[in-house]
Length: 339
Image (cartoon, rainbow, N blue to C red; front, side, top):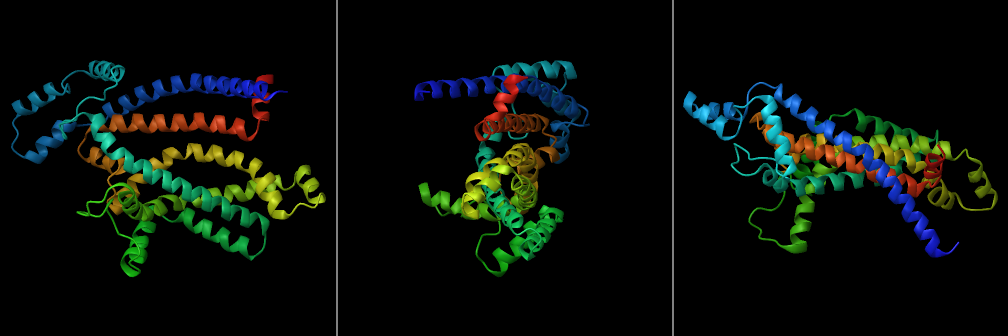
């Protein structure tokens, strides 16, 4: 088979898998839009109620004018029609509290949350897979028992408590890292220096956010590696004289990572949810903290935008996981094609 033929078949296979995954994702996205809108419509009150309560002196006429200005006086069906029309024009509407488009409110916070999520996911995967492999290779011995106990503690401990203890240890006692915020105020840094400074502020919230997932990935990797080690091709590799580390990293992990990629893809939604706690504890200005502020202010348009963004992130992650599965194990495509 020529290189051109191989590349053509591989591209065709990836495109067909992407199209099938995308076909399943479209109705999911539409269902998410409808469900999110219905659930938020069932919540009593609106942004005008929160604004007038803070003002303390707003009249009924002022409240009515504000509701008319932002379309909150319409029926639920009419508001849904306006919302769908805005989505069709790539808009999320305007925020009564912030006085700017909802999309601008979200995009101002989104980079911070993406940085935090990416760092937390990287930490949880690297540390979790490494611990899981160590636990599997030393099954039943003291490294396995110690690390299993550590994973159980991380899994059982609330994230906010880990965050508070991290502040006490690394920020107060050792003074290694800052305790909160997203950058040094008044430093005037730019370029690489600004990124490094922001990264220092992101380490503690990222560690806090990743602690729960480290425990899950470690246990899952341990179970997957132990299962793969029983396969015939692993015994054949040992018979050929290959070293244990070569077999583990070149042969075992490739198959053991399949269930891990599935779980990691579904955990992106959990990372967004956990970001609310981490960002609140550390004062990190991201989507999670914006969600809490929107709930307190009854900013349902902002909440709809955040929920829509979160849903799309999970859907796209699942699409990427499907493609990654086909890359890690080509047999998946052949099994699907034979059905």
